[in-house]
Figure: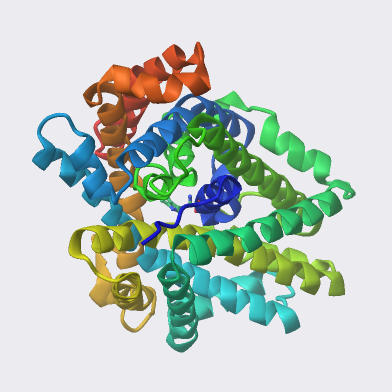
Length: 445
Ligand code: TRP
């Protein structure tokens, strides 16, 4: 059987599709709002350049050299202690855990595409009530759209790398870029653009406490899809001889540009029509619909294409969260792709239903521990604990365990003299920064 591989562009689009997700368009703007703008953005950009880019290359390298699911790749590449290293690959199960709430949020977005067609809330107050009603009491709607997300994602993954994942990204990524560019150009014509620009880029150092610092590092990581094995699994299907370094550069560039463009656009709209930037997690679901309302009929149009773009971003990331587990089930247990895709889907679908219930007024007490509900717990456990830990393990694996001459032989042709800088950053800077993030989470620093 001929093994399906990504085309060159196909790989870049798929990896960028994984990176560009709800993290860019939903999370990045609201945490930027919470941490006061400019200084936070600067730390995030420096982290992306210094640590994110190095780790992106490292994660691609493991996949590219291993050529299998994450467990098998670690196992075959480790020169010693293979039986121990293979456990590093189980990190990819974090993807299914993330999917339990990612799919629910994609469901909310589907719901907002449909309702924005006909109705927008006339005030932030009303928007808050609408969102709260869906979240806390409308089980049926959330279940319906969560089911839809589950079916779409599982179907795409069941079609495989070439005719499922690559094709999805070939369509949705250009569409996403087109929509954001269009809305960004419109934002450029509005008076408030300057204000949004100043908010995002004029650093106010007084706002930069250690919490903002750690949040910026953590986010740089999440937004690039690092530490989980998604990028690694895609890289296993790269063509032999592909340029890992330029691919990584493209992915980082696209992810960062899209986050900045989306942020500038959203803040411009919020200054112009809404209530200003700091609105927390509800920014996209509460402040934005109210701002769209102020724009009149054009607002309905903008709302629908905006939420479509958000859905596209979510779906292309979702498939990358499931694929590592699917690849594992195929490589290690000999499951057919179809079976592997639906079995994995079924897992996040069922747990996802519990996640919905953990937000519903009537049932939430059964799914809340220590003041956090199931949704918050899974988000915390994955994004805040498992991913930084996974990244730490990967940086150690490539920086200290893989023989330097092997790493150098693969990468130097693409990096020339920059190889030494990269290797240094991977061995010393990245693990150190991730270590601090983890200590911070544990409440040590
Ligand atoms: N990067 C995605 C976002 O910004 C989230 C995501 C997708 C992810 N796949 C991942 C995060 C793998 C970590 C690992 O929304």
